[in-house]
Length: 68
Image (tube, rainbow, N blue to C red; front, side, top):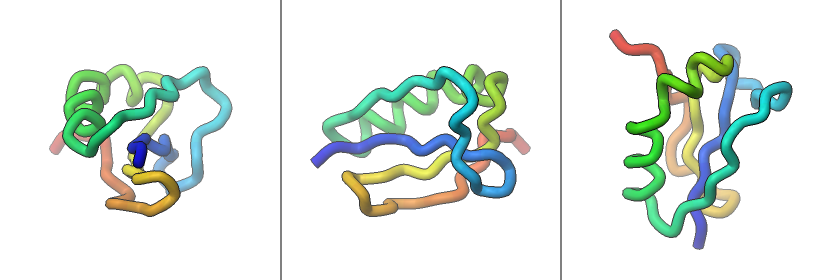
């Protein structure tokens, strides 16, 4: 099983017009740690929210990168 992030705009559409990281992780914890270290860079590239996928299954979706 692999874990990855889907990068989305504010409406939940996938952001595809930017060169975004396509890291794949071996577990949920590693994926979440990576996001904690990189969320501000993603926000600056136009990503407003993310969805965490385990293979093709959605673990959770619509998590905003905006603080507060």
